[in-house]
Length: 554
Image 1 (cartoon, rainbow, N blue to C red):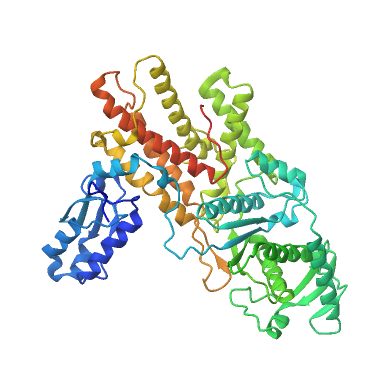
Image 2: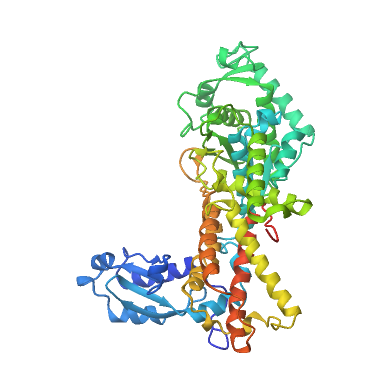
């Protein structure tokens, strides 16, 4: 349905555009041909979407696209798809060129829909996610809180934010019992639920003990067992033969480690299971599906599988899907001694302070700079631990100073570019107060056809348009995959922000957004300022998924 001026209503989505274009190919007898969105600056000079020539040969005689298909693609008008200016066949393949001035206008006049995930096409049913950050169950002090534990917490915290943006209900467990660990996480901008005594948890533990004691005399359970040498520090209450018990209960063991058998159950283990059960009972309301996601370091994965299986045995009617998201190890390269989380934070903060002093001189002092250094340190650490896919190992080079603003792949570099944008708008507002520039008129009144720089289309097409798709990707978790392991694209937004910062920096270094105070140049300047405003808002929204607050200036 078109609006009164012939414009189709609603935001524009890349995924919807690709879906409609693919449907047009299928209708013309080319089901195997696939469209690709271009992203490189070189290819975007001549096209925005492409079906490669090889795919056309497999779908049409001699690879020649029928004229009626080209005509159909050129005239498609469907809500949600990007406005098409031209479709043609070239040496590269079947090409779509968009109406770029219209696209700029449609997006920049109100870019707020592009700061959120693409709306779901499902029936609107939400899932309640319980994110069980396993390392926090055993973190009795900051001294025992490892770098791999920190990585798992960062993954859980970020995943919670992107799931909430998608409209899902999220509960984080366990509550933090150690104040030292809680205070350390607050330094990184993470406010995790704190410990609250729950009588239901205590009741669950008592019930589990009673049930296990009832099993005395069977082959699967005995009490006061002696632990093996490697678990001598654990106070064991019960020894459960998990495999035989699971077979008796008809539980599926697909995906579990085949070596799982005896489980030496401690008081801490029963507390863990009791918290899981209590969280499910509190979270599940009506027919809303519930999923428990165990976020666990690789070295603790085997033990967590045992706990998960014990929970299924103790609560055979548990109303939740359970999956395990594994975080790879964090290895410090050439350490002289083990490095604690506190030492890691202090080292990165010291490096960030030194780098700031070298760049800005003696002005780096006082409360405001302390906040800036803390913010830069938090961003550097989070990007360092999160920019790698969660299941692979992270190697930390503590002597590497590229995590400062010098390194284009660091969180600090992203923050530096946020500050450049803040400075840009401060400069504009100061010029307005001096009477050099007029105040910005409504964004819908701008003539965006003046945005003709390659970098401007790159920022809009690869970043503003793609951010909703990246948010969707980051929150995508398959709860129906076989086995018990799942993966999530927890690195997606980090990589997106790094690439955006590099492309923005290239554009900003080349183009003067605030031009000469001449009336005939104001139109172009206003259009560029609105593009920069969209980029600034996008950066803030993306950083908020890591609980990172960008500084107003650096």
